[in-house]
Length: 87
Image 1 (tube, rainbow, N blue to C red):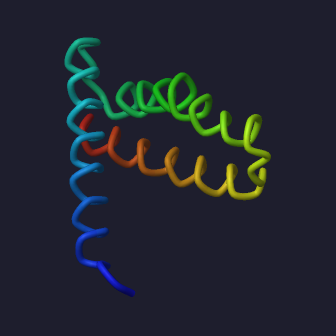
Image 2 (cartoon, rainbow, N blue to C red; image 1 turned 90 degrees about the vertical axis):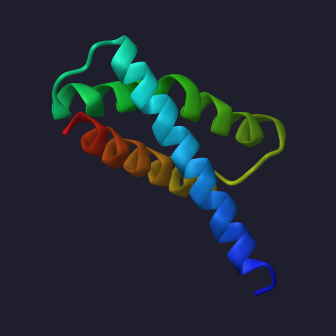
């Protein structure tokens, strides 16, 4: 339980950074609806998050169960961010 505050703070800042870049890409793509923003979040997840999180599964024999849990969490996070940004 050491450094929980620091970990939560870092996690929060990383989430803000991710939301900022999602909003940046949505502005470049001229996204105007919640559905379009969530679709752009889905494509970013498919194109960037899934491949990056698959590397440890392939090269380090990491558990597929952990991969699915972490990747599903990232998908949910990005979809929520996209929905908020697109609203």
